Length: 171
Image 1 (spheres, helix red, strand yellow):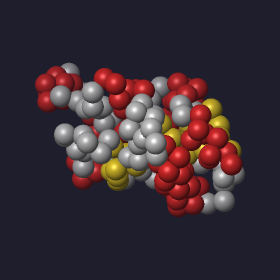
Image 2 (image 1 turned 30 degrees about the vertical axis):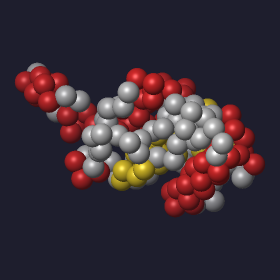
Image 3 (image 1 turned 180 degrees about the horizontal axis):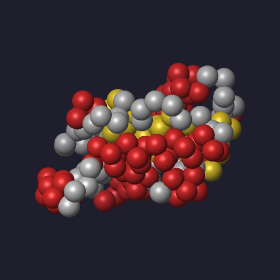
Image 4 (image 1 turned 135 degrees about the vertical axis):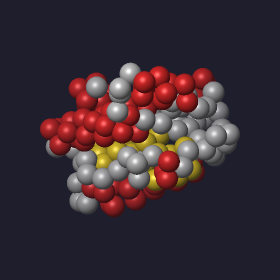
């Protein structure tokens, strides 16, 4: 959000802290209602809704897997930020964000000859988050995912649940 937008909303009496808390709670309510322990988000509008962090990258990154967020049903979201972002986000700046970590980009554009290794590293990362936040539950809602990464998560025993509809209900 640009500074002008924040001032404008504050002038209109909008409590941004409460808005952020409400949006995260809506996502987590939908996870609970769907009996899914977490959602992995790639769509910029879903990341923005769950974390209130705007996409500061170029337009081409809107639908490339270079930025994503992991939102657990209990706890704070983790944002995986594009490694070359010129204006990095700090979790300290956002009360409702647990951490900011570098994203593992497995987009073919960046990894033509090394995509398999990048996908493997990404899947390792997601499995680690699932162990930490989901326990033995292997269900993970995802709003959009590269088919190769999707296939590899399934091979690892992850039960992928449709996450875009979940986010639409949250919004």
